[in-house]
Image 1 (cartoon, rainbow, N blue to C red):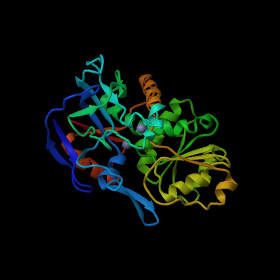
Image 2: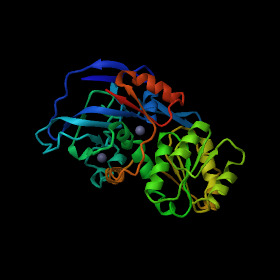
Image 3: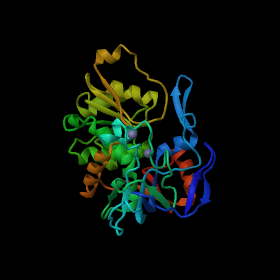
Image 4: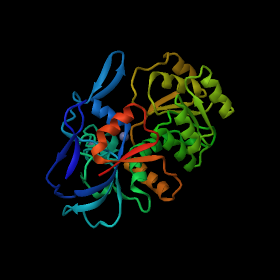
Length: 350
Ligand SMILES: [Zn+2]
Ligand SMILES: [Zn+2]
């Protein structure tokens, strides 16, 4: 098999040729047909992210082992199955739920493997999809994508799931006031489409980049506001007709978290998704005075992924602008993502 391998944090990915994968037990070997490139791949590639106040989260200190094949948005076909994998249709394209855990702890036992303290996420802790082939521990992580184009389906495994899980956390507000989506990158655009597919009002999008604001309007946003504007909060309230009940920060920078905090109604909810980095920007007394709920979300559960794929199967999530690249250009794609030059999603095709 061929792969693009992270050998050292911050160094260019290396093209490797390896022995073919052999499945054991319940494992399934998937031949990759599309691998989405996610913003969090950049963080892993760089070895961590800024925690603010001079601190940094280091993947090395957290025990992430290299070499590692990145890629946690895989779509592929079944190439081989272990003796315990059961019967599987080898004619379909499957998307892989990559957020696997130890399978035994209190989180894993109730289906929240993405909260596991001993995570085994594909493309993050164990080898992922920047390759011709990938090992999947169990067929329960495979979902038939039906007639969806593999390159359009791939981003559902991370950006789609993350956006869906974030929206689920404010689901009761979606029909009442437009949700504010901060950051119109791949996740933000996906959230716009999903909020509408979930029966919500058309969201309000906030981004500094005019190209991304245009993309957000095309994706169905009711308004796209420049976050750099002095009156951004007033513009959000005007677009919603009232201070909205919920905002989702897909950037996770100090400025965006502050904007989201200021934009929502009292007793509203700010969900933080992005890992841009920094420290909390709010004055502590304002949190009780505003009675705001500030909550985090990280990827999503296997059950949420099942729900998301059922929505996707109805064909009501229009494909995002997607650009495909050969597997060998993985590093160049990461570089473009870092420069903010990717509108929509980038997908590698082995
Ligand atoms: Zn991701
Ligand atoms: Zn676990």
